[in-house]
Amino acid sequence: MISLTVGPAGTDIGWLDWTASVLAALAWPVSALVIALIFRRPLLALLARLDELSWGDKSARFAQRLDRLESEASPAPPGPEGPEIALTGDHARFLKLLDLSPGAAVLDSWAGVEDALQSLAIEHALATPDVSEAGRTLQKRGVLPARTVGMIEDMRALRNAAAHDQAISVSDALRFRNLAKGVLNEIRLA
Image (cartoon, rainbow, N blue to C red):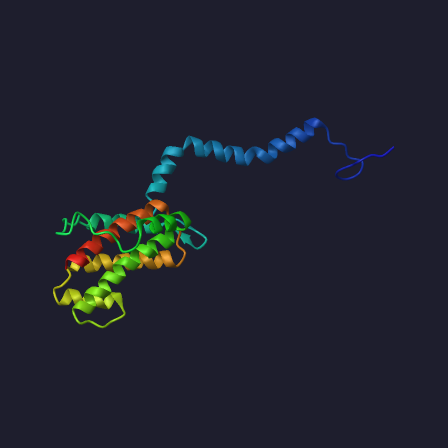
C-alpha cells in the first residue's frame, strides 16, 4: 500500500486542527477588512485630505495642482473668430492619445501652447527657444498679462510631471486640455 504524508511523518492532523489553523491564518485579514468597513466614512474623509499620495515613484499631486490652476483661471471671453480657438492638431488624435496614455495627451496639449507662445515671441522679435523666458519677456513688454504667464509656468511644471511618468488620469488629462485651450486663446488674442 502507498501512503502520502504531508508534514512530518507520524503526525496526523485532524479536520478540527486543520480548521483551527485556517481560521488562525485568516484572523488578521478578516479583522482588518471589518475595521476598514466600520470606519470607511472617516477613512474616505481622511484620504480626501491627503496632500500627496505616493506609491513607488508615482504621485497623485497632479490633480491638486490642476485644481489650483482651474481656480485661478478665468474663462476667456470669446474672440472675434468664434467662441473658442481649438488647439493645433486633430481632436481625434488627442482622443487616441488619451486612450493610449493620458500623459501623452497632456504633452500633446502642451505642444499647442508652446507653439503658439513661440509664434508670439517671433512676432515680437524675440529669439529664444526657452518658453519660460519668452513668456516673461512678453509679460515685461506688456504683450501678455502676468496671470497668463503664471499659468503657463504652472502648466509647464505639470507637463514636466507628465513627461517624467507621473500617473495621470484621463479626467486630469482632459482638464489639462481645457486649461491649455484657455491659455492658447489668451496667447492668440494677445
